[in-house]
Image 1 (cartoon, rainbow, N blue to C red):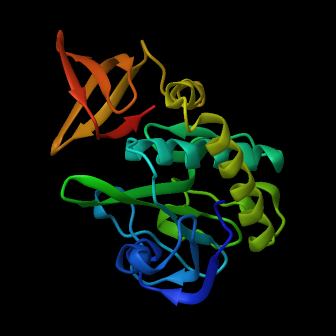
Image 2 (cartoon, rainbow, N blue to C red; image 1 turned 30 degrees about the vertical axis):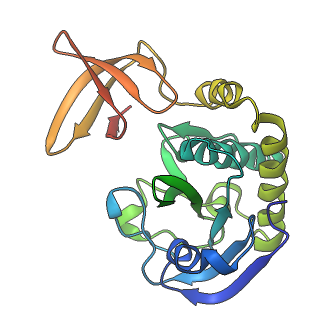
Amino acid sequence: MIGEKIIWVATLPSTNDFLKENWHRLPHGTIVVAESQTSGRGRYNRYWYSPEGGLWFSILFKPRKQIKPTFFTKICCVAIVKALSFFEIDTKIKWPNDVYYKDKKLAGILSESVFEESTLKVVVVGIGLNVNNDIPKELKDKATSLREISTKDYDLKTTLKIILKYINQLLRRYLNKPEALTRVWKGLLIQKEGQQITFKLGDDIKTGKIFKIEDEKMILTVDDQQIQVSSLEILEP
């Protein structure tokens, strides 16, 4: 069961790093929550602003069978969308793993894996959800929080409990049929097949059409050629 053991601390450099450093002595399903992070990070190793008031936590998954690490990322993405729906907040997933309210980022997910001799031992999924925290002025046009959306404060422990409830439900439902989870995840994406997007790939900014969204990659048509990408930064829409 995810969340049977919860470690709640005032501050950490990074909840993901804590679990990666201590996974040997912690059970599957352990949660570590930091009221603030000093070195939180998101995709592309970017700094993740993590002050008091937000929900910053990581989950330790120790798979009993070989399964793609992205399965756990999708579980957490879908669970957050469902939990926010419980609060009557309608969100979508920006490919592959950011949660958006309208055109602003509300939550981000960073998954990291530990392998030993090519065997997957651990998947750590870090989740950053803007709850009651203030959004810095320089991010106001890109990010939002639950408090900003609904003009009320949320209890962090209750919010975490609801997210974990959905994670456990989804794990029970989809652990043996990950392809069905992928269909659910695709249905919640902002980006759709056939849609034109502008994106950053390396140092280049390009425009292309989404040909197909697969389990771990996106196939794009760019300048009459197809390219496959597992990671890129979508700029538009």
